[in-house]
Length: 370
Image (tube, rainbow, N blue to C red; front, side, top):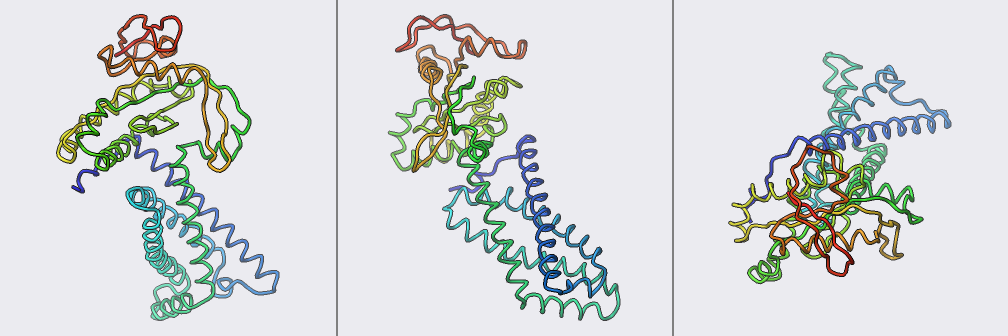
């Protein structure tokens, strides 16, 4: 596979989202380092031992260097995890990702430890001739100590937990894991939500042309490519169903900046940009059709062995029926009157398709396209 196929420019919003996650990791790791240092001091004081840096020099200086070092450590680790490691893991098995992460962490830990000790020893000895020997002696003593084993293991654990949290957040979608932890949907609630059924056009013909395995790789690539847009437009991925993905927003989030409409437009624009790469790799270019609707849905946790957050309600059935009308009416997107009336005015120029009968639904529904 052409490696260039996966190289995509990072948009401003995606860069902002990733940068915010890096800041979250940086601050979290810095707080953990301060708590760890405070815990060590309390244990040593309880056993009437002086902390080694109190003896060697000024403790406040060491505390400041330690905190600033972990700000740097957290920032470097955050950039590495968010911009490199997670993308690397997403294209490989978790076992390969973990092995690569541990190897990278080991190199990074040794490098940053050497850097941190350099500033610590420098603050004590300055530029004197004894600095270099003291620095090497300090590193040798530290790397052969129980303290090194403890710190190495502790921060490896922190790294693994950080990556697991990010991967779990990937699995359930941004914000959904937090809802699990907080038990927001442990008791079912009713919410007004926007749903989009995003379906691949001509999927049967594409599957016949590519064969089962290559078609599956095709779907993997398509869904991977459009993920950035989904995240930028603040959508939650409710389900992947074959060649279809179901997205959802709260009403407030979905109508803001026309996210539910712009999401579809951005996805198709992105796939047009990538059409040459898809043609070269697969011989076909993906294109989506979408149905969008606004209504009330009941949402709650469901399942025991495989727990998930599930939605139910007429709004989902109606959205699916709206999307099914796209081929019949010769358009790529249809949305309901309920959604249209909730959108900010003056930002799009919708075309009224007319009142349409939906399969299995009584009465007619006024639909729009753009």
